[in-house]
Length: 237
Length: 348
Image 1 (spheres, rainbow over the protein chains, first blue to last red):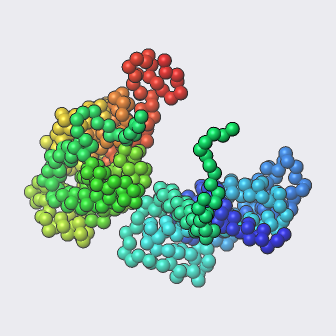
Image 2: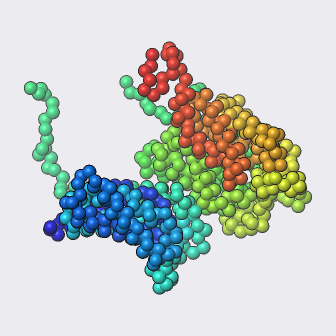
Image 3: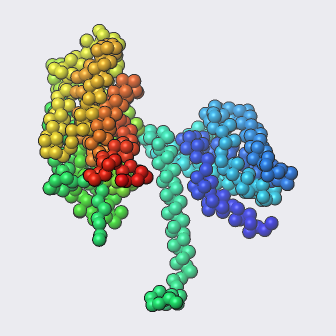
């Protein structure tokens, strides 16, 4: 269990194998509740909680579950944690619970959660699995919040509205009116805006990756001329 | 042998894409004149704003995509997009509304899909729907038609310029369109009778002439063989049948008559100029008739039971989505073959 492995898991979850931008999983909540930062952050944190805890639990019982019953077991575990999160939100952030509505119970069906349980947690020891759940969840939350911020900014001209729903009364003044007298660009708040802006984020990730790859290649240095050329003319016997 | 892959619009007679697009622009003149006559200089200002924005966006995208800029700019397709959008949006539209819609139409609806010939949706209508969905208030603020009662005249040039560039006063000047009015008072015969705007010579006052203007332009396009009769005929027939049936057989106070539907809103502009877009419409003749007919059906359904007063833009976009399937199932038989060559079926 080297620090190296933990670092690799973090890089995978946050960037290289990001559940939203690379695996393109869990799009239903990603597109549906990313209208504002507060909604996005709340659902992102709830999903992260379920992901981390279910990964941990699946990993702990991984030697006791047989191949045949593993999927129903995983789903039961995920459903149990989702129910816990749902009750917690019902108790402590009631208004947010009403706003997010069906998308909290729907965390059970988020393919990222089941995907990580089956592909990772059931094959790795508990600390690694917990760390993977946290990083995957954070990666998902980051994209969700980025999309929420873009949509809120373009749609309403403000950022961080209604943060008191998540952080209590002290967050009431966090709203930033970035563009005064903004008329509101409704399409960004509506579903088509979610699709378009997710497309923009995906494209942005691909551009950054391509740039980084080009930079890495440039650092390695161009191959010396003629060093590894293969002759392709003439007869091949 | 090197074969050049050229996208539609395919030309069937001497001429080039630019020439055909110019004919379309000339054909909008009667409609443009009627719009200016009844609603003032707003539409002209929209045009003068939209055309440079469209050309600028087109040049920018062509440059970014490493395409020959002047070759594509000369085909006038960006200008046609700008003209159709400028004719469709209200004359009171502020400058940013016109520019945003035109820019979105050219950059997103046309070039992100691959430029002229590759766009599945009519760019002008994508721009229009984006604006309608995002800014419902600005997009439904029309002026009352000039001459509706003795006090109504078109706003003078300075008022129109103020409306476009400062956005003030639009509320004070605004008036309902015939489609709005009927939707508001549907089912109330007294209120319908009292609404002067519903009782022009043939249909809604002012709008009937705008639509007749576009009908004349459309007939010109038919005469010059820029478009074929299939799509407009299909669309107008569907509107005629549905409006006629519901008006005469169901209830005349809830469902307006045939003329109201044929000569209101965007019917004629849609039938002759927008649905006939050679790139995004169906291409086989049978396919075109079905395509136009279903646009008419959708227009009637959304106008009558939907949330928006007019529906030509939505209907055209929805049917653009169906055009490839229509073409697939209506592919004509090739000479020398017994049946049409569909999909994986073996040609005989």
